[in-house]
Length: 116
Image (cartoon, rainbow, N blue to C red; front, side):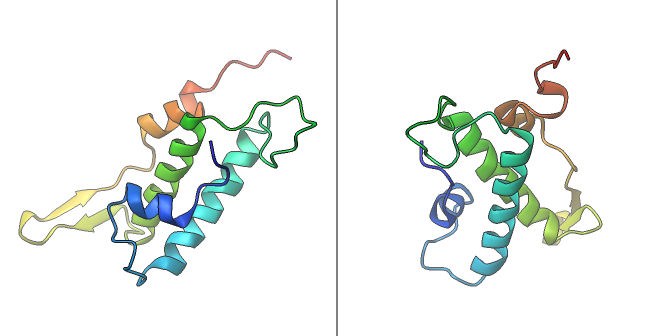
C-alpha cells in the first residue's frame, strides 16, 4: 500500500470532487495530523519504505483507517461542540470515536494486548 495516504485518496473517500479545492488546506491539515498520530501509536511499520527494514509495510487496513480518521477529524473540526446541523432534519451528534476506525487501526479497545 502507498504510504502516506494522499489528499486525493481522502477526497475520494469523502466523495469530494477532485477539482473542488475550497477545503484542501483543512483536509490536508487533518490528514497530516492523522498520519502523524497513526505513526506514533502504531510504530511497528516501515513507514519510510526503507528496503533494509524488517518491519512490514503499512497494510490496507492502516491506510484506510488513517484516511477515515482524517475524515472524522475534518468533520469534527466543523463541529467543535460535537453537533452538525442537517438543515430540515435538525442536528446530529458526531461521536468522538468510531469503532470501525479503531478496528482498522487496532487502537482503543481493539488494540492488541501488550505484556511487558
